[in-house]
Length: 351
Ligand SMILES: Cc1ncc(C[n+]2csc(CCOP(=O)(O)OP(=O)(O)O)c2C)c(N)n1
Ligand code: SF4
Ligand SMILES: [Mg+2]
Picture 1 (tube, rainbow, N blue to C red):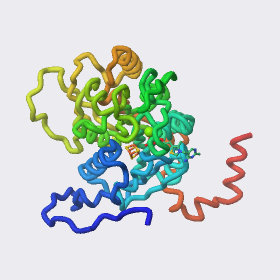
Picture 2 (picture 1 turned 90 degrees about the horizontal axis):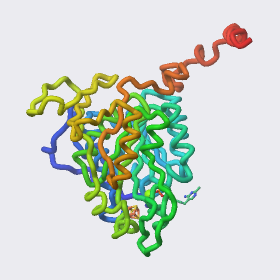
Picture 3 (picture 1 turned 180 degrees about the vertical axis):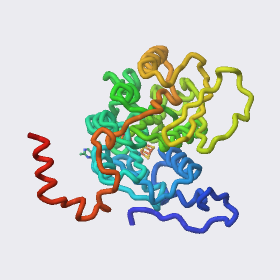
Picture 4 (picture 1 turned 60 degrees about the horizontal axis):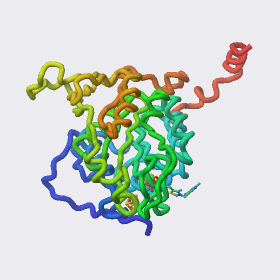
């Protein structure tokens, strides 16, 4: 047996969401990852986010590549569609599925090896094409599944468990996502559920390419002194830019905030992203400023987290290609085989 199903029994008084589901209805099989692996906390955050958003599990398509991180879709949303693809190929499989059926919510889960090494091109092109998805990289700075080699996101100068120093420059996936046009860009930490859950909720309500780089320590191979992806290092250097609340119905601001402390951004679907600013000057709707800020704070040794950029008016691949709204498997013969006259009209338009 390749997976361990969870027993279905649960306490009858567990809280339910608007659909009548409990949090348990969003769970998957029992995790076989190492105890303490950051990836399990991200799975828990995805479960919580989908429960709180009242998402029907069958409306989600979860996609992944290969790696410990890419195994995790087995551990959440057991009633959703899923596809565990080839190493580094999740983005193209997700793009194809999305083009065939835009009615599902696409959740891509990947690793730093999966997305910054073998799948770097795939990652880049899915973002620049504007695929409507939530793309989460569970970033531990190593190839966990193959026993701890440095990955392309390992910081230059960081040390492997046995003392080897990484001499290569790190790829910052956030910087690339910003440059290539992602319309929702965030970074978080698996150890900060309060920050991560709303960031996932905001991404899942976003109608465009949403990217979350989530630092997720590997307790087996990259949680020692000298690592820049360990629990201790990230806690010490974490610099949150803002705190996010996602509001799906209009709700009044209840807490007392200083003027200018809260910024609200309305998304296309009507949900409100309420950003509690922790850095007064930071404007998350300015892409160039976000890139500049990221580089500046990195040079100061900080790991910037929070919602770094949002375009509240995103365009997605379907809008760019002017595709048909109806899922392809629901098109009838008349639409699929429109006849010789329609073909002639298309050809005439190309002459
Ligand atoms: C085409 C191909 N090349 C190499 C591998 C071996 N391999 C499996 S997982 C992996 C790296 C996984 O690292 P990452 O994506 O960071 O996931 P993690 O295990 O750290 O969560 C590699 C190199 C493979 N499975 N397929
Ligand atoms: S090897 Fe690392 S990434 Fe893989 S399950 Fe263990 S702690 Fe997690
Ligand atoms: Mg990894």
